[in-house]
Image (cartoon, rainbow, N blue to C red; front, side, top):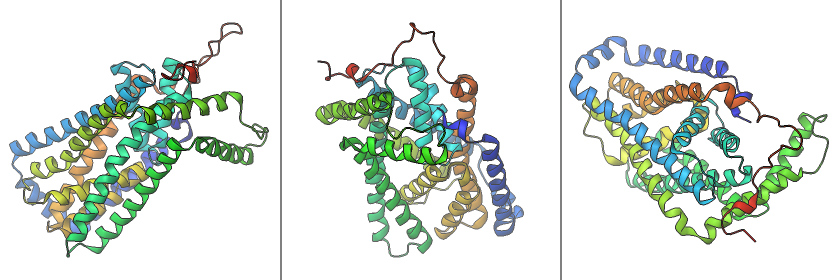
Length: 371
């Protein structure tokens, strides 16, 4: 079931409106609209249009390589979806991630539901593919975070607020990766989490969830889930293409920040600065989604001031960074959701008459597990 069913988009857009209002007030009191207009008047229109267009292009290319990696992982588990549908499902999940603050889990659940609805493959197999792709992505992220931490500690004039936020992000990302690896390497991990979830549901909805045991379908999915990871543990070469794809995706996503600064004629910031900003902005967006509107904008503007930009230019730069990294994906994702159809995303799989029910594909379809 899609996360959209459990989270009101109207409520989310209300928080977005509040966040934008707070950021506008911040610009008014700390930067001044007059100074902002002066800065805007000094921007080279041709240079701005060129680099800003490249930044939007980097959003599309970066996300294309991410979905290509996800599709490549699924194909190794014999879950076949077309590139067109992978594009639609990825962006639908991405939209959910940007709207719902649940650390990318809701987006993965949305993709899981959409892929299962199309292919009828076992939920456990599809979930194993999604989490495997997410593990690779977070290995790259955590490696980058520790590299950035090394660069930070080598500098003696790091603002305390930047260092504090970065340390919290580093701890959170490392813990998140540890949980994903636990799911991938422990055969009982998913079962324990499923049992915990069942206990919570029994407390919240005791009439519907009376049984203290998992259903046979859930146990079958859990078995397929673990077998999916086993394929990649026994055949690590299967991960070569996803690693390449996700590395390219990461580079394009990082380039978005450089291109925004170039669009404003700012060419003197160090590469380590962009690495730090990328991880701060990306990690906080993953955690807080639509709730990041306003708060993250102000945090970025504050960091830019600490790194030498004047308040007006910092506010404009923060707004443009967010327009590329948050607003443009949000708009693209919203359009894609309309194409896929919100009702189609939320509707349960159609019921079939008895005798014509097609059972979900089970773990036996995973390569290497056939008997």
